[in-house]
Image 1: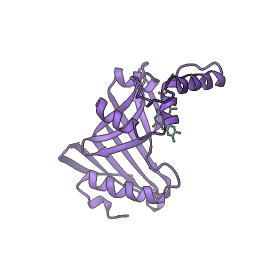
Image 2: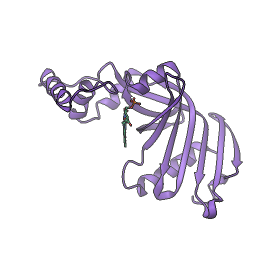
Image 3: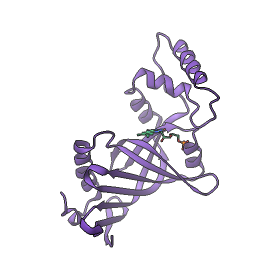
Length: 198
Ligand SMILES: Cc1cc2nc3c(=O)[nH]c(=O)nc-3n(C[C@H](O)[C@H](O)[C@H](O)COP(=O)(O)O)c2cc1C
């Protein structure tokens, strides 16, 4: 699946193939992606998150819903995701609408996280000012005490978002910057494929 990928007509099958290859070749976090959102000031914002699940319904990440990105997505429920797999000289760009995952879906994923991460989700007021590292450590100790001998439930402010793509672009490096690009536009199962100049 190197230079023949432009013949693909199913963006999800192509993503599956590329993600499998990235999972084998990237030294760390093949699921790391840039999440771009629209800031509350109307300007773009971006940061890395981990893609924790995908299927034909969309691509999911988890976060603190009261964070900057959470507030931005509440105001403008649309986003772009960008994967860059350096080891393969590839990128995949996705754009689409954002919907919150169900409580049951978030609970199921939360339950797979290490206990320390679940405690951290309670202790971190993500994206708010933190006067000193010690304040975070105190908050972690307080939460650990509070949940001593019991399961650390999912905080109400911690959940996931799903991007349902309406545009998926695949980019493969080629010599002399004469790269291959194909973009799929539409929605499941009707995609229109276009080749783009590099
Ligand atoms: C490799 C990597 C993975 C990350 N994964 C996540 C993630 O899955 N969820 C998350 O909320 N933040 C993640 N972060 C931290 C975010 O980049 C960001 O600092 C944080 O979410 C606050 O963003 P905000 O202020 O725009 O809400 C990750 C950072 C890196 C570098």
